Length: 447
Figure 1: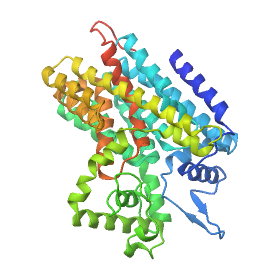
Figure 2 (figure 1 turned 90 degrees about the horizontal axis):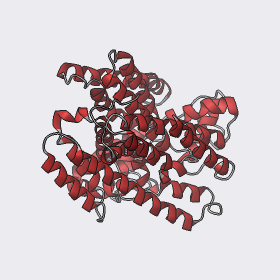
Figure 3 (figure 1 turned 30 degrees about the horizontal axis):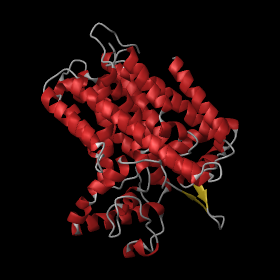
Figure 4 (figure 1 turned 120 degrees about the vertical axis):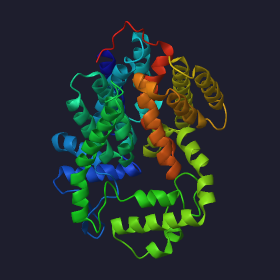
């Protein structure tokens, strides 16, 4: 419990420094504005320059809705949202400690939790009114519930709670739904009965989907066509498939807007048009689209720099370009060390194919020193999966592999950016604890 209070104290101090100094920038400005309108009872709407108010769904509702709750009580100030980020971040540190304790001794669990508490990007991203930090926390909390449910005598309530958390996570960041069946399967893994595992996966995914359903119905009623979570799926697919695609974000505006979509102004209809245009581009030039996959993953996993970028963009005088670079270098070294430890945990795990796992760990460690360090994440997943059915007996490794696989799949299809990998690192840290101090059979993990 002390580690959670320590993490909260660090983040509270950072919020005290940042509040009033770093205004919302980029997407954070939209989240803040939408949350403010929600807190004032104006709905999830946007008021345009000419005074017209429209219902919107381009940005997922989850994060603005969470912020709106605290704005309603404490006032619509960015510092209030930063405090919410700090609270979620502290709970995620506690969650990582509990997850790591399922496979690591006290030292390993403590180091894993400290790694999240002190993670340069996760810590300094606390002032950012962006979705990656809160998603990282929700994934860690969900993984904690999944690991607990796995050993619970009566797991049904935990399965339902897990589905609810992942449903909220999906409303914050749509691709979170991809981990629901994986976390659900782990939550039901205790007996390794296929029927139980499949049932757990289906139940958790169903609860998560039902949590999202009211929002989907709202969109069907209020928007120009139905939208499941957010009206940006086609937009993001087109960014990674357009003729000018580079593997990371490129603007879709002006001449880069497909000709058939230029006179469509409804938010959902335009996104649907972008989806058709993106799929058409992929069918026409599949080789070009596939060739971008390594670049997309490189942009996602090679280097983040999100925290420094945000602070510098918000206030370059308070956070200079030199500080941004220094934080980015520190973050990169820190994250690669965690990935290396997670790989070592795969090699040390008892089970079959130890030679293969050792080889994958060595190869992954070498790639971390190369221009294709993103491959280390792929090799980590391969090493974890090589354990086969016994992977469920290594919960920290299983949740880290599940979240990593979902992230790899998502950004191979759409486009990459460094901040998107931030959501993984609490779970990577939990897995890293396995390399430092594997738990002896006589030690019982604490919830």
